[in-house]
Length: 289
Ligand SMILES: Nc1ncnc2c1ncn2[C@@H]1O[C@H](COP(=O)(O)OP(=O)(O)OP(=O)(O)O)[C@@H](O)[C@H]1O
Image (cartoon, rainbow, N blue to C red; front, side, top):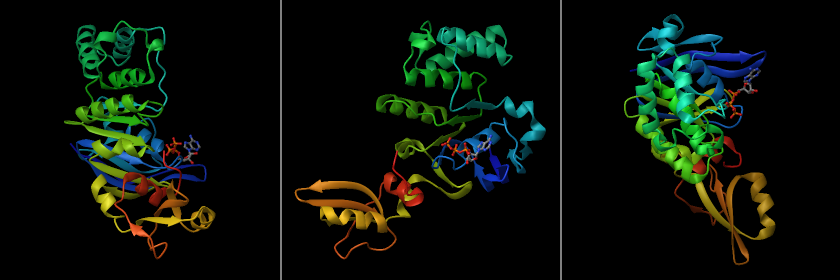
C-alpha cells in the first residue's frame, strides 16, 4: 500500500496553510509534528478526503483519491481533533449507531463492534455510558468508531491531547498495534508521542514539509547542536536572548542551561546527547509541550 502526496497546496484566502507538500508513505505510524497553525489539521483533512487541496493531488496505489471517491472513503478511518460522542449512549450502542451510518449491515456491525471494542480494550465497558468515560476511554471510543470499516489508512488528529501520561502510553501502544498492517498518520505537538512508535516523523513548519526521517535519524541531525552551559543567575536573560534555551536547572548557586545552537554558545559549553525536546526546540523555538 502506498499513499502519495503530490505537490499539494492549500490556501484560505491569502493564508497559505500548505505549500507544495510532496510525500510518500507506506504501512506504519507516521507522526506529523508541528507547532500550532503549521498545517497539520489541514493536511489530515485532505488525506481524510473531507477537504480538497487548491492544487496537487493524493494517490492511493497510483489512483487519484478524488476519482476513487467513495472507494477511497471506504478504506479511510478518521478521528478528528474534536469528535462528538453521544454522551447518553453506551459504548456499544454508539458504535452500532456509527456502524449503521457507515452502511454496515446489522449482523456484520455486531461482529465488528465486538472486534473493535476488544482491540481498544473497552469490552468490559461496553455497557458503560460514554459521557461517564475518562478522556482516554473517550479517545479509544473515537478510535473504535474509526476502525469499524476496517480502514487501511487511519488518520488521527492530536490523539493524545488532554490525556494523562498513563492513558497516553496506552493509546500510543494501541496505535502501534493497529499500524502493523495499516498506515497510521497522527498529528501531534507532543514530542513524547513520537518517541517510541513513529516510523517516520514529518515536520511541518508554516505549511512546508521540512523534514521526513525516522526519529533516531532526526536526532542524529542535531547531535552536535545541544549544549549545557553553567552560568550565574544574572546571565540567564543574556543567553535567552541569544540562544534557544530549553531546561534551566539550578545547581547550588549556579544555573545550568540546556541550549540548542549550531555554534558553541560559550567556551565552557559541554556537548550533550540530543533528545526529542531539543529537536522540537531546534525546529520550532517554542516551549516544549
Ligand atoms: N477553514 C479555515 N479558514 C481560514 N483559515 C484556516 C482554516 N483552516 C485553517 N486555517 C489556517 O491555516 C493555518 C493552518 O491551520 P491548521 O489547523 O491546519 O494547523 P494545525 O497545525 O493543525 O494547528 P493546531 O495544532 O492549532 O490545530 C492556520 O494559520 C489556520 O489559521
